[in-house]
Image (tube, rainbow, N blue to C red; front, side, top):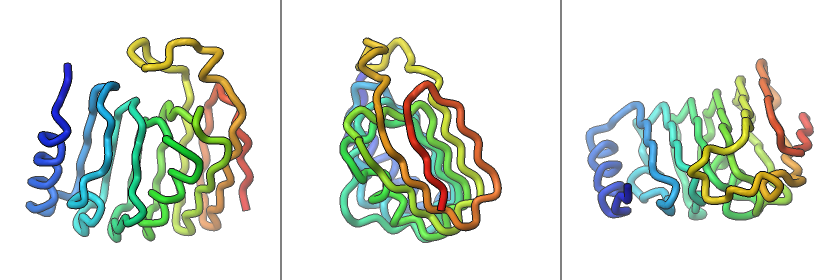
Length: 166
């Protein structure tokens, strides 16, 4: 099922204009998702869950000042995509990376001083994921994690991902 990007932007704009606290989006794999501007500066948003197996395109400006929980399943479109997103979330306390696709990423940094809980689950990819050759999805990627207040870390992955905690 194809969903129009303009419809997704309309839904998220309506939600943020009504000062929604929690937003949970599950989008089809063929949808290229770029955060709409209204979502990037949603001051009321506390929880964001994004399930899509498409490329995540993140613009340089993000300001989610009250976002405390972020869970997503996306394809990182390039190196440092994660850091661009996380730098706009200054009070993020819980981060869940679920079956994220890192093929286009050789190196990324997760620098979130207030994050307390970090989950990385890589359990393989669903049948409708755009990249079906499992050998193609298994690759090397370095993820540097700077989380000075980290209290809980759970990682289950088939990927070769180096995590360094500082």
